[in-house]
Image (cartoon, rainbow, N blue to C red; front, side, top):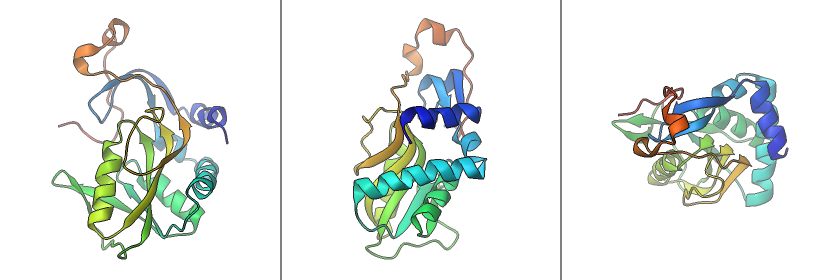
Length: 194
């Protein structure tokens, strides 16, 4: 599945939004990818994650024992990636501002773990999830996401495999282009800013 086919899936789901968006990172952007909408169709989620799993296998070429994703945005894509790879999938949750394992989840010491996100923008959530995995005994062999909004510039500390890379501008609040500043900002994501 190439970049155009991936974006066609997002468009068909009404998940490729244009306007003025306040991202979880605190940055502002004229484009937002609402992965919850693209993943709400199980057949579409399976198509996208099958393509991503194939790319992960071809790129990493090593054993994966477990998929771990950060809640909230990574839960559905992490589950489907685990299903596609034939391994268990768990997720991390924020507890007092940091990712932690809850719900009886654990990681076998030395397990080869794939960290899976829906969208990577700055890589902060990915790095935080990876830190949690490492602190709990896992060996992170790579990361995967449906979309890499950084166009390959986000450094998560391990190889990042994405179905599509996009070069989407994002701006701090004090450096908005006039056309973007003229639009009201919308916060469509799942994480509130503090």
